[in-house]
Image 1 (cartoon, rainbow, N blue to C red):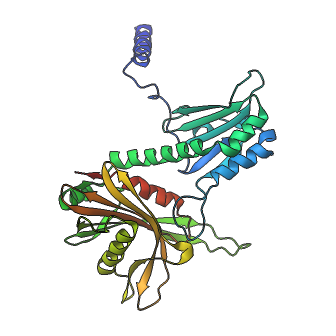
Image 2 (cartoon, rainbow, N blue to C red):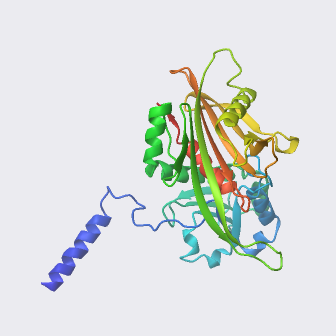
Image 3 (tube, one colour):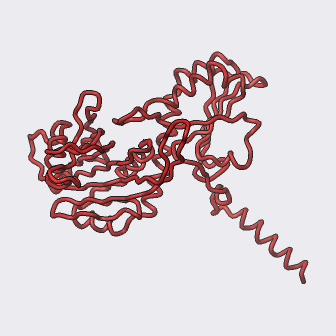
Length: 353
């Protein structure tokens, strides 16, 4: 009887594994590691030469947007391919460069594999039989790879927010502004007016102090905020331009986002080095103005503070109005790149109903 039971279990297991309805990655472990981190697999010869230098240079490009200090698009760390083990092969982003000696290539081959060792993983392999051609690709051909990793990271975050939305915020934005928006579950509505809503998400993070560098240690707070407002649209106006969106932003924030110090309010940094950047583009069929810049406190009294923001002003033709969603970050002790990537993901969940 015991033998029969074991045989039955084995048959059921084999049958379930052979089921065509089961996704190929169903039994893979989940990818781990920080968003924005890339594991580079490269042997010593390539890593210590011009190929390694070129790859690092490309991954270290300045992240899009305006930051108080320049930040790289990705953080990277390198392992020799022979050191790839069960733990580090679960990294969410892996990039491998290799010279192949047993095959002659006519051009550099680029293989992109999703869910290779783990679910939620992108594994890119770049290989060639010609070391000089491999270097040429590492130097001048990596735009596609950088974009692939960036888009992959964004897709993962968008999927996460859409699958686990903040239901209260989602219901509010649908009712009040006619849009669907997925913000993190732990975000809270802090202010609600007729045409304006402020949502905040606070997180804490510990930093180790250092006697050698005199770096301060302790627990520090990071705040992400999301502001949503609507504005009547007047055809033939300059509202749907970068300058028009900035003018509307500044007047709206002055009225609705006061600072903790009396007479201060949230504004926009306009100094030459930190001047906001903008563009007009099509977002899901709607004319949209995107702004990226730094927010600051303005007013009668000087108050320190500020950080990066990203803002979409979307024209809703059916209602003849402009819906603006702005995400910002305040975290003076930390790099802001990944918090801005999260905001980019939230903005890309917007659906105009």
